[in-house]
Image (cartoon, rainbow, N blue to C red):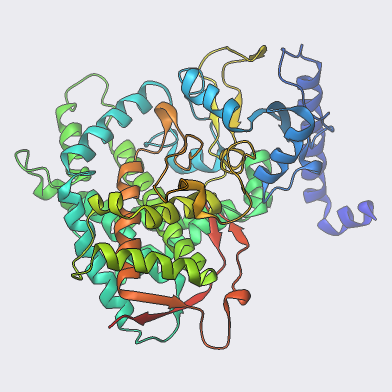
Length: 499
């Protein structure tokens, strides 16, 4: 049967595939005869496939948790030809990312992201370039008011626009993805100093492209490309992603160019202004780190990741409140008690809203938005008695932390009591790591926390969210769709305004 299938492909294609098979076999044999360092134990790999036959490509995080039951919290898997060290459970992940933070600091060159960024940007760069860019980005964000009253005012202004948009549906069903509008506008205002009108064609296009790219990043064939990039000519998703990212870049380049024309060194209004000013400062230096490609990559990183994470969490929050109407009602009762005059919420109000705060945290824990973001060792590393060579990919499983049975009473259930004590006071949990931890934690963490609280409280202050007519809470689909993040399936909601 295999021979007949090859014959149908034609002689030239057949020869190419056979050559690739021989090449892959030689690569495998070359790697297998090398002296194996003292890596952690793991399942024995098959030739060519490694351990892919026992791993669910769509839900690698769940497969890793299953393997940890046999091989312990630190083990090795083979994803195709690549050896990967996996860390599971709160203790192992904390030890690596906090106690050994400098050793597990770099990013591996993941093929799709390398094709997009070429090692530039904020998230997928490494070494000195990453350190310089992160320091610059954190400093610029502080100067732009992130985490302060200035950005809080922008979020509340955006909340007003979002409320008016939801009112316009007059209680009729609308898509959960509608909630993407507000977080995307906050990110864009920080990047370029201005927000979009929700009906702006460029904004609508931008939302569509981001959604499509993030969805394609969960494709099994995209994972296959990352495992075997030399087979890229046979696969499609990475090509579609590259085309759509290029369309996003066309939009971003126009705004970057506009910023170049209006930049004022005495009044830097946006992150892009700050990037371009830094570029001008380094213009005459022998090595200009902030060249055009790096500037574009940094902006692209914040557009894609900065909008996807918060907007997807907001969708999950609304979906879970529809699923658990009693919890939604209790949230609204607390909001009404604290904001009895009908005033808009402030970030300080979270101290007086322990239940709402606990619900927001439990949404993030339960949905497990980013199961893992790979690292790689920056130097030869000794960890828990094992030797991990420099450049080895390491996967700290955030799923295993947020579902760690030693840290959470009911890890597989949506339970806001995980963040409340016996008296109903909010309790911080060390194992709450949706933003990762250590020196490479999410740099937008403070902004995301403020956005989530203000949008969540502001929305449930004014609306009750219910399933569309003809469906009930029981009918709501809570199974996540893997993309760049764990996304809810496309569904609709109805917003009933409060008097």
